[in-house]
Amino acid sequence: MKKKRMIAALGALAVIAGMGIGATANAAEITVPDSGKITIAGTTSVQHHLVGYRLATYASADVDGTTLNSFTMTTEAGNKDKVVAALTAEQNTALQASAYKDNPMAWVVGNMTEAQLRQFAMNLQQNAGLTGGVDFQIGENTVPTGYYLITDQTDAAALAGKPETVSNPMLLSSTVGDATADAAGNTLGTVNLKNSSTEIHKQVVKAGDAGYVSNEKPDYAVGDEVVYELTSTTPNFAGYNIDPTLQDAKKTRAFKIVDTMSKGLTYNSIESVKVNGVALKDTDYTVTSAAAADAAGAYQGGTVVAIDLAKYVNKAPGSTGEKLAEIPAGMPVSVIVKATLNKNALISTPEAIQANPNKVDLEFSHNPSDTSQKTTTPGGEVNVYTFKLQMLKTDKSGKTPLKGAEFTIKTTAADNNQNVNKYLAAKDKDGKWTYTDNEDDAMRFTSDDTGVIAGIDGIDAGTYEIHETKAPEGFLRADLQAIKFTVTVTPTYQADTSTKPAASTVWGDHTATTEVVEEATGDTGNMVAKDGKILYQFDVANAKNLTELPLTGATGMRALTIVAIVAIGAGLLLMVRARRLHVTQ
Image 1 (cartoon, rainbow, N blue to C red):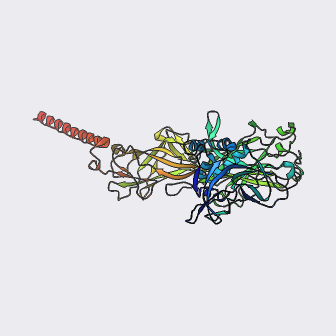
Image 2: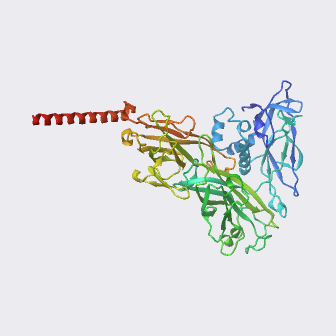
Image 3: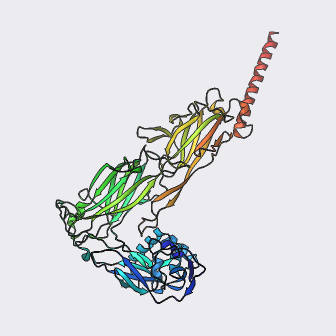
């Protein structure tokens, strides 16, 4: 089996286990002892049932005093398949292409980020069949030296009446010989008990062939509809108090999803609330919306939308839950929320990416005997984006700004805007763009006293055709210059998988990292250039006479044709005059 020598490879686990990067000249390879220590820290009022599974052993280790500098690791044969099964499809592909496909834990430790390791631990816990389970306790534990997954298998009854939840799974290494820290000073063999709760997830979605699918390009025009999906699971309310009348706070189970929109988003509606794929009725939940009080930053002036499923989980009269013997635990919950990107949306440029965020929290009871005691679990925060363009109108020298030039703009490709191959027509009072099929009805974007054509903001990423329909006074007519060109706005996105559900391979939570406004294309007259300072601006020149037009390309041919027509016309005029003169003689 391929072993992997690692220098600080466990440094990625600093938050979880703490294996840092580094090596010293005094490090010496030791014989890895049979046992090490794992200490679980935490104050708890109940005896948690913790079970650990060794995922890998240390074949060798270089230790300098109490510092572990490097090591080789071998995956436990009995858990190898479970380790591979806990990887995402992309991770498994990378593993199989590496030299460590037969030693997956070595690849995991050497390649995963903290967020990926947290998800990996969750996946491992959910996949049954790990072997070699060893009971752990709060405090110090002597265990076979190795790298472990520790799970909390505390029975729900043990938590009755206690303001606690089970712990999240924990990945960590035992101590190795005398090594109790890595070269970066992070401790080995110590972890804090991690309380956990029912999770809530959030993503941006779009219409697919069979329902909504993850949207991996979350950019929109102002006025576009933005659709979000909130997903969770029903809590384990077995043994909890219940009040179908919702009157007794200590007996009324709480299960509420709270969605907070930033100022650039306007709440529209809740399209559906589903449990286990079945749509609930309006007698199962209530929806309220209000201003986001005490919010700061992008959320100041935003909206809080609460989807309260108390009727369902308390089996209120007329609810779907009323017909159930008990509310099933762990059933998938899905909520579709619709919003509109509004005129307050933050607009991104290549110089400054600005997100319009939306976040979600889950509030639910965590004390069976007093359901008024609640846990609030933060979920993901997802972002949507919108962009802008600008033009500067000048004379042919590029030095004199020109007022009064008019342009139309046509959307020819867009990530999410449905108005492709239509012209921007107008903006309403809410900043929403309207569109038209006819250029005659299109909005005229006009250069001001400084030559700037502004107001092309709140647009979707994509491709736009820009056409000059009127030249400034004193310059060649627009039809003679035929200035028409195409520009493209292209953002780059990075997936944020830290809150992605384990079962999902694709998730609509992406952060824009860069934006590029491409060079203009289709400019046959060489009258358009991307501005060197303002990266979303195009400088558009105008010719004052035919001599300023290029003599090559379509524009040049047009100019030559015009000259030829003028010359022919002049010749014909001379011929007519000569004939008249001949007749009179």
